Image (cartoon, rainbow, N blue to C red; front, side, top):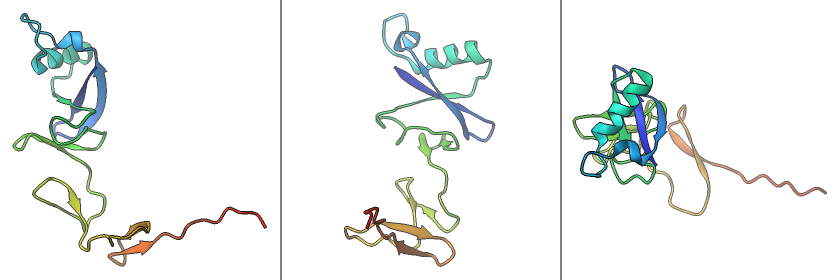
Length: 126
């Protein structure tokens, strides 16, 4: 199955749909993204579609609602998780301070601009 992302006028993903691979076949029996876009347009009347890969083997990563398609670099970019994070050369969001590299679980605190240790919940009853 193929997946196509519907984009708004700013290339933000509105939704992702599944299209049977047969809808992508051209006259030579080869899969063709343009055929898939034509199929999506015929169903929804919207022409701004881009193919995405659930296996991340095209356009960096699978498109999700709220992601942005960067047509210049032909990649999908996830929404910025926090305002302090910046996009690196590999189109991944990076925090101002790297997360500690140990076996603990951390969560980013935007207010303090730091990683906070997540304490495990002890659900044993006494």
